[in-house]
Image (cartoon, rainbow, N blue to C red; front, top):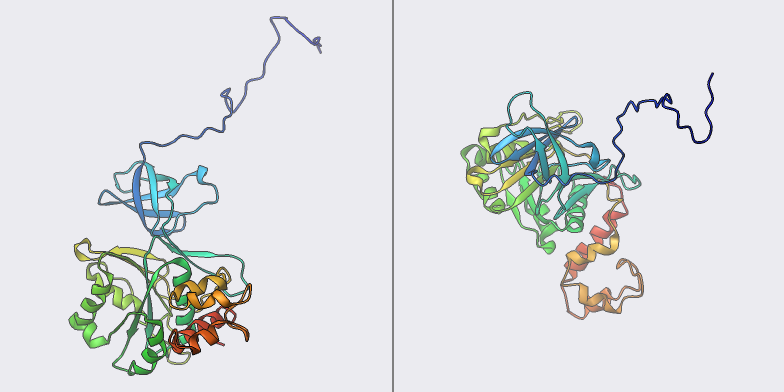
Length: 335
C-alpha cells in the first residue's frame, strides 16, 4: 500500500468521485419568480387541488416548505405543469400570508392545533333545531373560535319544520349574531338557499356544524352543480354519519362568493384560545374593563364590569353572554 506525505504532488494521486456531484451546497433557495398564484380548493392525502387561472391543477407540497402545510382557502405559489391535464403534478413552493386562520383542537387539553380553513372572513355555524337536537355549547365554542380568528359569525338554523327556532334565537339575541332559519321545503324550492346566499355574497364563508345537521344539504342547494354525498341521523344514537370527509371550497354561482364545506364535528376544542381575547368581541363592554384588577378574567367577583353594567352603560344580557362564552372556554363541550 502506497503512502503519501502531507503535501503529495504525485500525478497518480487518485481523488474519489463524489456520488452526489461536485456542486457545493448552498443555503440560497430559488425565488420562483415565475410561480403562479393559486387557491387551495381541497386536500386529499398529500395531494392539493388548486384553482389557477380558472382551471384546477393537482399539486404537492415542495420539500423546501418543510413542515409548513397548506390548507383549504390558502393562497399559494405554484410551479411546474399547470395545464391541469390528467396525471400531471405541479409543486407548491410558497404559502402566502394568511388574512385569517380558523383553528380548533380535539379537546381543551390537547396542545395540537388543527387548522380548519384559511383566509375565510365569515363562519356559518349550522345547527338543526331537531334530529339531532341543538347543542348550544358547541355553538358557543364555534362563536369563541370565530371571534378569536377575526371571522364574522352567522347562525344558520335548519329543520325548522321539526321544531320552532324561538327559544334558541332568544338565547343568542344579546350577542347580535345574524341568523337565517331554513326548512326542508324551502330548501327544495330554493327560497331558503336564496336567503342564505344573500349573507354570503362577496365573502369566503366556512360552514361548520355537527354531523347530520344538514350542512352539506344546504351547500348542495347553494351550489347545485357540485353536489356532495349526504347522510342521515342514526335513530338510536341521535348522531349524524360523517359523509363529508374533507373540506372543499366551492364558488357560488356567478362568482359572487365562496363556501367551504367542512367535515362534521363532534367537539370543538379551544385549547389555543386565550380567554383574554374574547372580550374584544364585545366592543360595547370594553370601556367598562378599565376599572378591572390586573389580569381580570371578567368572570370573577371583583370584576368592574358588574358595577359598570349595573349603572346602565350596557345591556346586562351582553355581560351574561360574555361570561357564558368565557365559561365555554373552561368547559368541555357537552358538559
